[in-house]
Length: 333
Image 1 (tube, rainbow, N blue to C red):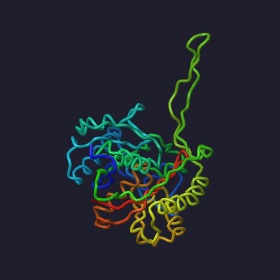
Image 2: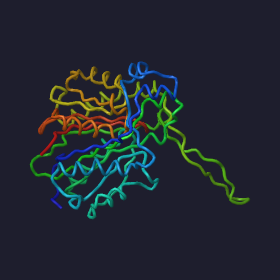
Image 3: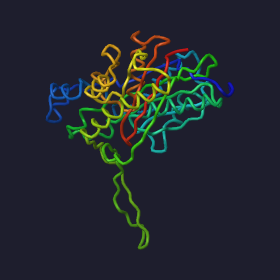
Image 4: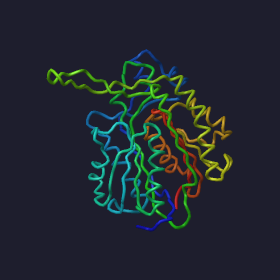
């Protein structure tokens, strides 16, 4: 335990995506669509999809191992693992399985479900454990395998989603807090706009007792409502996070939004007056990977040498719940 009053530094990143790829032309053989139709409306060119033998836990471990290696620590040094996901391998959660696969025997592990906002919410949650002096090294993973829950005959949703994982290592520091500001919101009155809903069938146990037994429906979405929500709320939450950080938009080196739709990314950047060269997007390659999208894009930009130590990064997640949030941080020690 490092002691109360510690700051947080984000010192390692990693990502993983399935090797199996479905591009727009292949998808057009499944549903009535085309490469031009998909790219024009979403900016997506392909998506990486987990094969039947690939688990969410496996992808998460691959991303986590890279983040741990970059941070220069061992899995045993981890105190906490937060898995942000809506698609665990086990309905009871997959974080503990990942802890076991990593050999992070000292770490407590739990799942956090906030859909496409999950990584942002997970990072903010991690910071509270560090700032209060409870834990020193925290692994935050954003991972989803939404291909399991997509209706591949529904053109409105199947063109959007892909699978992947991203992770960061957060560490306590007395050298100044690198998480500069954040904000989080929820609006359950709009819950029906984006769902992966339970679907139950009545089952009678005896004359007096009946239950519901079932599974889950495929992903359903009101695209127009989600677009309207994102374009309105995301610039607002980023501005609030910047205000909490005592910064302005011009202080931001990089903007990384949840990779849902290129139109949303462009509209938010335009409203904030963030120039295109500061906006990170890998949507064309991966599609919407839900909680994985921000850490996956972050890790790629670091690997490409775009993001450097000391850069100020604004991230924002938004999605089912409805939930949305933003965080402003400096990368590296």
